[in-house]
Length: 75
Image: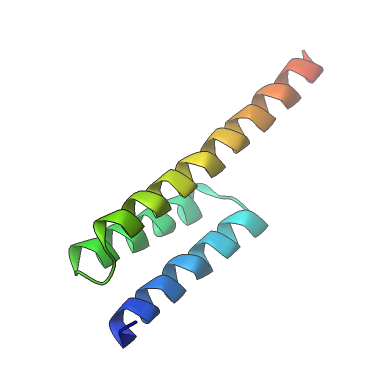
């Protein structure tokens, strides 16, 4: 693993850890930006890019489902 690749992976993973700890729209944007920049600069492969995008989408889907459940309980 090259140093550039490891730096990109560490940066992306740090964003995911922050996102899991406390989700905000800014953290979602930062995570997306980290993934896209790493891929655009050739630091991660297409397969890794797809993995990270799918992972972020799963987090969003889970958050939306949790919000919908809370909303349904409060209605």
